[in-house]
Length: 264
Image (cartoon, rainbow, N blue to C red; front, side, top):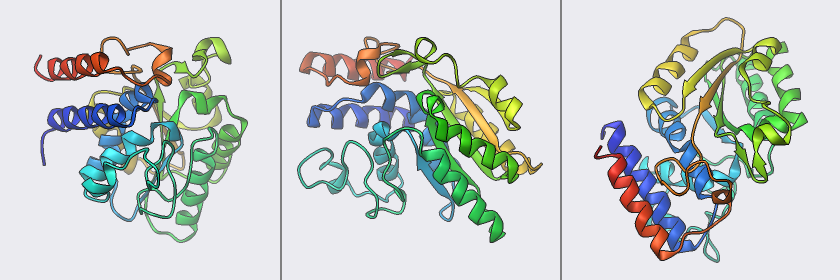
């Protein structure tokens, strides 16, 4: 396997290529969570375990990871966002094992993941369940209902990862409903909480491995501080890159920025 920096560069570049070819948006959120997905899907999750992408608007980041692991073939990946594709802007279920549910409307991913974790506990399977939320997901009431369920049922093999890039579709998260992805709230509910740099794959890997062995009756949450549009200078921390596609000039600049980032 390539080292993490090579994988990060390859998959960031792939996100940009496919977004440009499809003239699609949601680039900023895909770039903020790609390192988290690499850590979970490439380095940590085994084949029997489940991963749920609650922030479905970052579907392209999921697709390029599943392509890297060999589940989605190159020919299918090139159909992203095109008519008749199995890889639309938000994940569609029932085609690939790595995409067990159709998601995109925020607030549902943790509910699904807690159900899977509870089923695994009843069956004594020993599998962990992973779910990636946006900080926007933590504005949703169903997220908190699921969180309380996880604590009450001692789902200590549930690993929640929050892509805390601090920007939602309509502004800074702190200006919408406040910082609902803060550590104190999750601690007060009863989670084991780890605050990490969401772009440091070695740190993410180490934290996930710690969560795997910490079977103390508490579900786990990794609050990953990330940068929306990470790696592309004009996208970083800019709300509009929740939506915009790239022009030809912007695409060229984005590729240059990624090359520079991984040759620094």
